[in-house]
Length: 223
Image 1 (cartoon, helix red, strand yellow):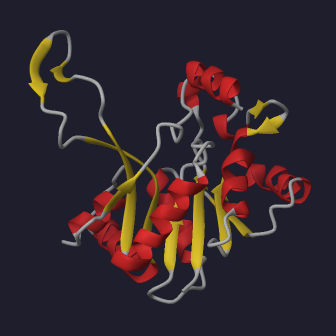
Image 2 (cartoon, rainbow, N blue to C red):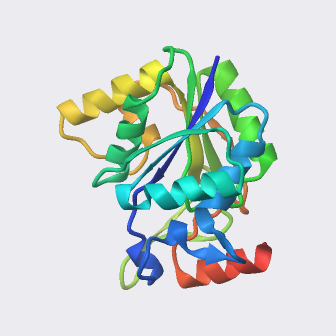
């Protein structure tokens, strides 16, 4: 059973407030995406990495691959307009069997702990899929300009990546979504639409998504 990582990196990163996509911004002299890619390079369970990105960044990505010896990267593919498109383009380029595991991870989650990654992969091996989540530890409310209601947090989880699914099921879910003109914010939603059970595995607060300038400051302080 192969374990193939897809890293969608085609986003513009406009919310970060920087001119270039956030995944290519340097922190301590190293591009943000490299931190994420190195996590998978170092994990013994991972066989292959595919990066989907804007074609104008392929040359930079190839240079980063060589510089940081990211030998598990097999190809770069053109990203799409939406995250779902970028994942699908990468998925369509894969040579995989139906039961091989596809591991989708945000390029801007650079501090994924090895323990979290390994735990998710092993859980997916046993159960067929795994979605990394963390428990909510703050009071949760619903509202815009004022509090409309309080939400019980006991059964509320924050979804992270990686999200891991068998190749055959994920491809089926994505083709169904396109056929019905559905776009989702992550892959687990598409799997759930098929009627499949989505299994939760333990995440980490270190595995936060770098989105804003404050996030960059926090990430820099941690590395």
